[in-house]
Length: 99
Image 1 (cartoon, rainbow, N blue to C red):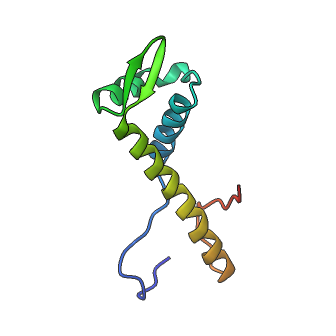
Image 2 (image 1 turned 135 degrees about the vertical axis):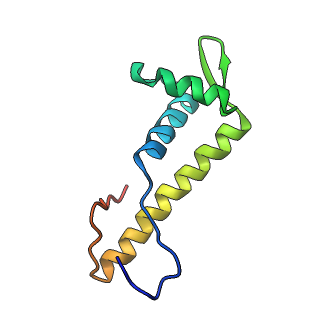
Image 3 (image 1 turned 90 degrees about the vertical axis):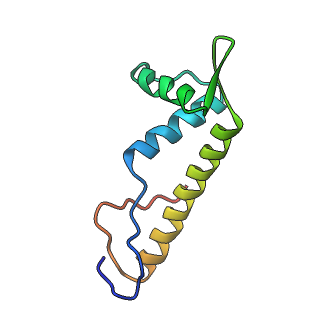
């Protein structure tokens, strides 16, 4: 979308942020992380977003804030996509899901 009315480019949430959100939500709901997420697990601990807790992980206050921020971003992207779709503008690569 190249419209001069907008003062900045707005991009969709990236795959890395979606992967991060999935890990944070899984930790918050006490689900096991995917075996492929071992590197992410280490990065979450190093970044102070999660800590070892018993046999698993628990979110730190910073992890909770990051999770909420990403959830708001996803919700905002969905709402923006609805507005754009209502105006009849197609965005390449944007999937509109209404959950």
